[in-house]
Length: 287
Image 1 (tube, rainbow, N blue to C red):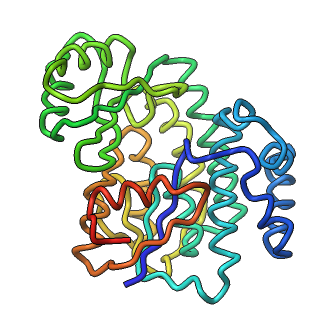
Image 2: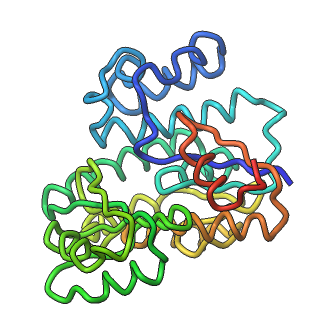
Image 3: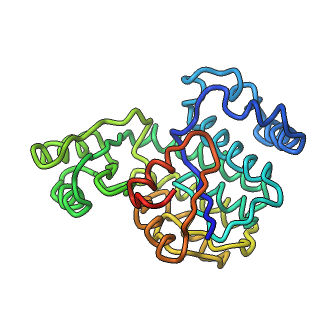
């Protein structure tokens, strides 16, 4: 069964999407429409901007979403998914490609999400770190041991790679707890504590926008980050999309469930191949 997966923030790179823009008329129209919806020239930043330009959350999220959805559109009739999934932001791309949300409405949601997350980062400073070589249960135990600061598992990316998120104090204390028990705890260059309780204000900000946006039944099951399970009911999809901001991304479990349900071919649509590499770590026999 054919599965398509869509990456999140961090997969961006300068020049992304330029070749597709120049070679595909329908994609070009989509990109120019995005400029109008966003109120700034995202194409210019994607094609000519620096890494620093692209790192701004308000730019990164719409840019990754735009290219991911454009790649699905460029496939035309060849885009026939049996199931889809997206990592964090990529869930919006997956839902749009699977026709649950209209492109323009989804882009507005992504822009609002990016702004709300950026604001939450400024109001509640935090950070993230990747724990390498530790079992999920060990990382959960380490986070639970910290009582005086906020820190939680944020991304279950693959066996032996869990990202933690919280205040600088909380992340530091987990690092101390895990010293000598894992291969390493690597600080990530991010602007805040994504997928943690520190994103609560962003969740509240996004709630009204999601509720007022029309979601349709997707053309195939969408495996969502919050519970790693397939969903087709618009009300469930909305609720899970909202919960995602303060809950962990269960990517390892998502891929395992997709494989259990018959997925034997994965294709990544978006900048880079981050998810393809993670899937290889989760199940070496799957490409």
